[in-house]
Length: 128
Image 1 (cartoon, rainbow, N blue to C red):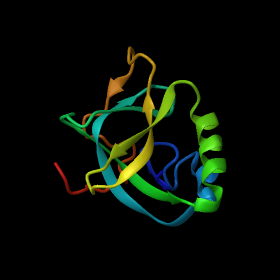
Image 2: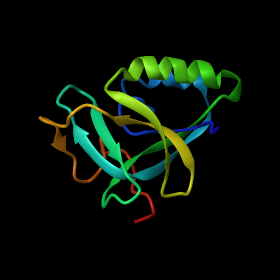
Image 3: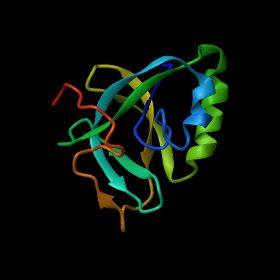
Image 4: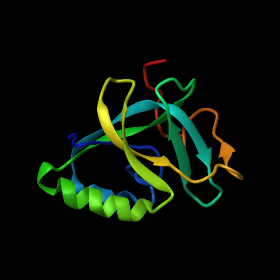
C-alpha cells in the first residue's frame, strides 16, 4: 500500500480543496504526471482518465499522506470525490506508484484540456 497521492485539480496545493487534504499530508509536494487525459467538466473541477498506453499526460503533484492518518485521509477523500470518481493506483512519469482519482461518469459535455494542466501553475515534468 502506498502513502503517495497524485492530485491534479482542486485538491492540489493552493487550490480550492487543498484545506481538506493538507492536514493529512507530510513533506513538500512534488511535480509529476501520469499517462492519461484531462477534461474540464464545466463545474469548476477537472475529470481525468488514466491508461498506461495513453498518448497524453495529466500534470499535477504528488503528496505524501501521513502514515498514521492514511485510512482517515482516504475516507475523507473518497467522500469528497463522490461517485463520479474511483480511487485507483497509477505509475507516474517519475516511476512512483500512487493513488489518484479517475473519472467514472460519461465524458459527454466535458472539454479536453490538451496540455493536461488544470492549473497553469503545474510545471512541466520530465517523461514522455
